[in-house]
Image 1: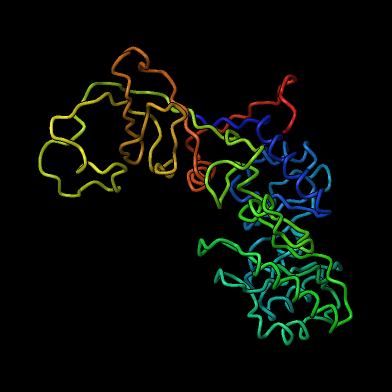
Image 2: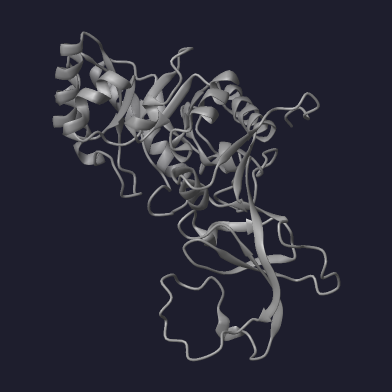
Length: 368
């Protein structure tokens, strides 16, 4: 069977790298735990490593946080009006861009006898959530004096929807908007929350304004991904999550299907078979993970001589280029895969592939 191995040494390495980056700038950060889908074992391990701020877009996932030990809870999508009471009850901070929703949060917080913190999100071109800059003053005027709301700062989502590369100009706009609001309203805004995994590569070029002091980081922590340049960020590890999939069959087969192709398969092919020559053969292995389990196109074989060529709902087909040593792999062996964010998200949200924690080792290398 298949299993997802979660390497605590690699996770601790990446967390330590982010801690060092953020603390050097005098900032703070929140773990974006969405991809964990509420996995209690990993959440508990993060808290054991010292994480004290976790953000998610699903209230059910935030409920899964261990009760022992304080952890600040952030709600990372704009609250729908029907959920404001739960948001106040379960979280400390939420991201907001609608006046009516903030007023309802204020009422619910008052009824619960507590205060609720918010980050006012500003639209800077990614076309996700955010107050349009031209209406920012009016927006802020409307919510400034609410008795049960603490405005913690301003923020933005950059590169999350459109795929555009975050720019220094966008970050400088946030700095100027904070200065404008603080001068006009005589109120300190402690946070500019715009540091994300996508912005980490800009640090190498020393192009991040010092005022950006809060980071919401998920993908870099869990996958080590350099979202701007590709590959892995300097000093990070990309093996926190490894899918181990068991070989159920391995045989020499044609690499081109026989008969008329009529596109009756339920899933799009992974490999373009039109580029293959008729009669071409190769070694193919079936593994016990398919489209039902993950985004197969996001699986990357660890072995250089393997590549995924197709998948159905429950199995994937892997071409193995080992003609010189046909005994290298056999039925029952495991093939290992790293993965993209989308592939990891599907696996974590699924119930068919078990998740196995690999504990930290006493001889683990210290973070770079």
